Length: 415
Image 1 (cartoon, rainbow, N blue to C red):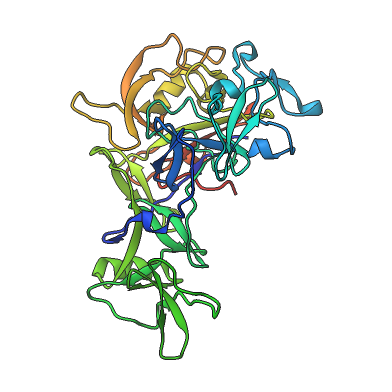
Image 2: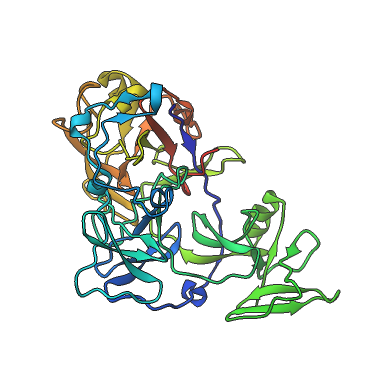
């Protein structure tokens, strides 16, 4: 079954930006490791050359074994429901797509960083017991394309630096960047230049056992209770989402940006789809932007939406090549356009494939078009006016879990 997900963005007008490093718990790391940044997680561990490091939940499925291996699977499904994969003779292994973060003979464990032995005799770095990998989707230092579109499976995750927060406070990802938020996923606010304490805002109350630390302090209220403040900014929350937008727009309240988001290209616009969905990315004409996501139903859950993968997965979504080319159009990049943040310009297949038995993107013409986290972005012909998002409703039954998602904050967890 293929399902299309819509991701949302809570657009904000003003905010307070604070340095994220203030909350990082410093710990020793080997010289082979450095620190990078992800819009979705904040500070993360990378190789010394800046390539993002990943862990996989597949390694945790059976203790003492590796889920990402050199095995090339030819069939998907299980038991009586098993089937032969399209173009199985060309399929890669998990390690072809996800090389290990290898440790050489001079490597030495330190702190939470250890070295594990793989069955083939290779040595691999591990963090807190989790073997570490790279991603071929990442082409340059700073790329974080190895998890994009995958949170619904939670198969691949980056390795964030340890951070300390008061109980009930965490980071949530919005269009402005990583924000301080509550467990309810709502933004935490502080009082703005025109604001004041009022009954509609609930203070972030601390327990009797909580103590100040770092830039986090406690404010005693008239009733004797204590609530948290950060860098002398008292923290509040509300259950009324509309109150957040109204008070932010008026300057009475401000959200707190933990990490400012990377820049975006000038061609991007944003539009509100529905209150429960929020803001999504669109082109200059207001057309919603989409990306393909696909996974094989195999033990390694390998992605099946990269150039060279079976075109059958895409044909299950849009049919013959002519229909697919008509319905899904890559977003062209102009000669003066420049990459920005996680948005890049690449040679995107056009049309995507000739027929379902071919490989996606092989031996077809290409156009200069936009990608987001390494994935081409498209508009859908069924969207006739700004605000339409009919592409996300399309479903099909294929040999893989394929998806199109509206580009926005991030891809939400699978329901």
